[in-house]
Length: 358
Image (cartoon, rainbow, N blue to C red):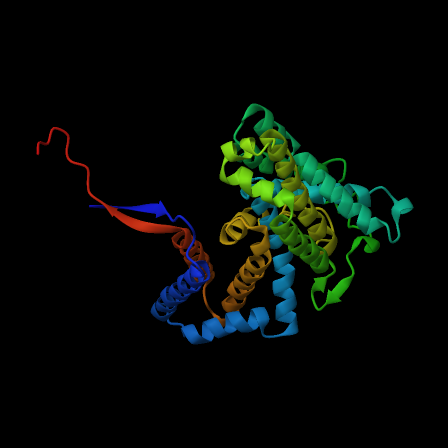
């Protein structure tokens, strides 16, 4: 007898939410055992995680600030994923967006004033979209796998930043240290509350607006049809090449916006690590949201809370290795639960050995 996964004809009614809850609870239970074995009180540790993420305005603002790049990166991946495409290059596109925003900030005092930040964010969106242009053309025109092309461009973007901070954009006042000059004060996004800035409102508007648009518009319907069946899309008169190209460029543009907000909101200068790993984390966010743009916001906030809580419990004496393991358990439990909401385990008879007779 063998076990295999078989896709359900339709997801369990309400089962996905229940599956997520059960999966996370199991992860917490396993984590509690790990904490007890390492000499820590699981109730105190989990209480610390909750309080640090949502127990105060400062904690909530930290969680929401963390959720901004996670949500935009997750949306970028989910937009492509809605059509069955995998944009693994959100990290590089975030970096490209930050480069575009930094370029506008370097244009000089002529741009100083209220137009600077909007122009920086527009440049970030454009840079992210342009950076996805190559993979989009390769996939739509030549059939080249977008996973490979987008992934390779991540390293290229990092090396471009490295070149800029060691070369033409190097800060001459930094005692030969390889950094770019600090951004002007007017390039910083205005504060909202505590550690949050208006980047939170921009990201929320984009994520929620895009979720509603894809759920209710003809464009979103075409996206879902193309993602579920190429033959059905062709029968409906949908141009797959045009749709693939548009979706991948749009995905890059959204990731670029994340880079622009990250630069103007959390960073004072362009640095090599401006991507922060958010592009890769966005893949997990999109997977937890089942590649549905409408589910990205909630997942991003939850993911941000897990990250903030994971850092906070280290102040109670929990080793970083255990804190990271707890975060991984929670995310793995949620991901595994999502799988079983769409698939069921089926038992099949083992194949008869070659040459066997009845």
